[in-house]
Each structure stands twice: as structure tokens, then as C-alpha cells.
Image (cartoon, rainbow, N blue to C red):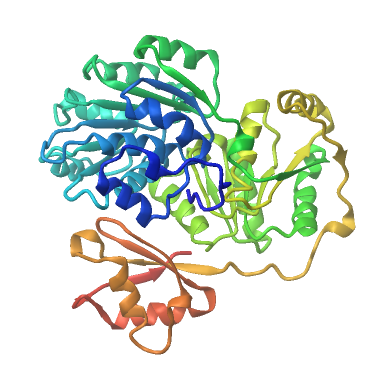
Length: 467
């Protein structure tokens, strides 16, 4: 999360007693002012205190605990010194990437993700040399512990990220069995978007005199325009078309309460000519990763998701959140809409309300201590003009970090001729064995031709456009 939009009275990272290499890395990624969660938790984390913090996705909490982990890491000691447990692979990947980014100036720091959906063989090879930091999901971490392939007895800092969601997903027993393998002298940092009674209970069971920090969603987002509209269940699809016609969002996450509704709505929208992807628990890991990548790259404009699947997503410049199904949990509503209005931008949240669900709106009003007017969408709101194409198309390359490929190598290959410029190239993500690059929509076939014909670092790579 960029800190560039914060007000001038926010404290600076440079005021913290951090190792010079870490301050250098923070400066390199333009982290200058602290976000509220970073400012309120920094002292406790750096002092080695236990912490229980309530903060939304996008609040900067990952950097808050990453800084604490990296500041006391002994790079010359090759054992696992920090463990971060996350509910999903998607969040694990985001957390690991942020830690690696902040560790850029700390030479030879090893950060490893251990999640389901990835080959066990590759993970076993990576574990032959102990990583300094492990980020993973409870099930896969427990499996490695049972196999004896992961040693966490030397863990000094343990983080439970999105703890409320892990408890919702039934991971309590797995978490407790993992914690049994760590030292009782460890520092335990617990982060949660909501604060149900179960969070208080697990805190009492695993922490010592924790510092408590709570950052309201309003402290981490810009102004969000909330619009509620009546829509009977059988009229919701038409209401959605009208809402998108009225507000014309460039991109949007559309929330449904059930996995079956997510897939049905996604299929319907694609048949209507929209560019949408589904994100729910019944998809395999490759499909989930691809959906998130395409949406983040602006290669699809609509992401239809359940709350569980979308937990931990932090998308830059999200135009709108649309609650196709209103959530029965007011805290969850706040968590959903907090994904828009980031980085100082205005946000938009649209909620469709069946007349039988007005009590859910009232619960949200009570929780947020405000009042909302429920309006009506009109037939003339619908826009039947051609649906705009996405900004980019995403290409997948058959080479990655193991082939010594870096983002700069991909840019160099694409711009070697005059057919493409750097302005035509969007986000680049290089993984172990593959890489992805977003290309301006109208230039994607040119990029595909270049990558198919040219060599990258003297290597021939295969490329394809992801549909």
C-alpha cells in the first residue's frame, strides 16, 4: 500500500529506530509516512511486545509486522525466525511479496510460502535450506510439521493475519497445533479485520499481556459514497445492469453470499459481453490465482467473489464495490466497501436490497452510526451501448526466476523494436517457473508475436494470451 496520500501530521518511518538497510528499502518503495495502524503498532512491535490489532485489508498492516520481523532478523543465522499464518494462498502470496520487497536491501534474506495448491516436491526442495521467514496456510504448515520437513522451534515472531477469517474457516485446532511447536518466548502478533469474541479468546490463550490497537475503517480509506437500491431477488440482474449503467465504474468487485451465485452471475455477465472472472472456493488454485492476476492487471473489469475468497485482496484504484447480495454481518459490510476509496481516492459502494432484507440495512446503519436512503434504479439508467474493452490483456511466459528472468529483461525484449513502447507495458509478475506481463489491449498480439519470435536473455520462451 502506498503511503503517498497520507496527511502531513502522520509520523515518519525515518523516526523509528530501524536498521539502515531497512530504512533504505522503505525509502526505495516510497514508504515515508506511516499509516495509522503502522504508527499505533510500531512501538509495541519493535519493543517485542505481543499485539492484537483490528485493521482492514489495505491499512498497511503487512508492512507493520514485516518491519518488526525484518528489523530483528539475524541474516547469518539460517533458521526460521518468523512465521506468518494466513487463511488463504492469495493472502499468503501478497504477504510474502511485501516482506520480500521490504527485505530487498537485506542481502540473502530467504522468504518462503508454504500453501496448499502448490506441489509438495518444490516446497521440500526449498526447505532443504531453512528460510528466515515462512508465510503459509494452516493446513500445509501442519502437514510439513507432521512430516518433519519444517522446523519452527526457533521462531521469534509469529503472526496470525486475518485471524477472524481463519477461525471462520475452522482452522482453530490447526493453529493451536502449529503454535505448540514454537517457543513460549516468541512474540505473537494477531491481526483481525473484525473482533468477535473468539478473537479475544484466542488472544488470551496464546499471548502475554498484549497491546491492543484498533484502527477504524474510516482511518484507512478515503470518502466512500454509499448507495442502496431496492431490488427483488428476481430483479437483481436487471438492477445490476442499471447500476453499472448509472455509475459506469472502470472496474468493480461484485460480492455474492454464495459460491453458486458467484459462478452463475459471472457466466451470465460474460454471455452479456462483460469481461468478468469468478473467485470462489470451488475453483482450483490456478483458476483463483489467474482471476486475481487478470483483475489486478486490468485485463478483466469485473471480479465476482465470495467474502472468503476475496479476503485479503488489496486492489489499487478500485472504482466500485457492488453488493449483489447484502451481507448479514454489518462488520463484513464495512470490510467489503473498504476495498474502494483507497490511496486518497473517492470510493463508491452500491448495495442491492431485497425488500425483505431492510433489517440488514438497519443493522449496518446502527453499526456505522449513520442513516442511508434506499433508492430506486430506473430503466433509463441502463446503458446498452457497447461494453468497453479492458485496458490490457495479460500474457503468460514459460520462464521465470529459475531461468534468471527479471522484469527488466521482459521490458527489454518487448521494446527492442519500435513496435512497442514502455507505455504499452503494464504490470509484470515473475514467479519461479512462469512470468506474466500486462500489455495495452490493442498491442497484445504484437507483444505475443515479439515474445514468440525473440529471445529473452538468449532463451526461447513460449507465450500465450490468457483468456
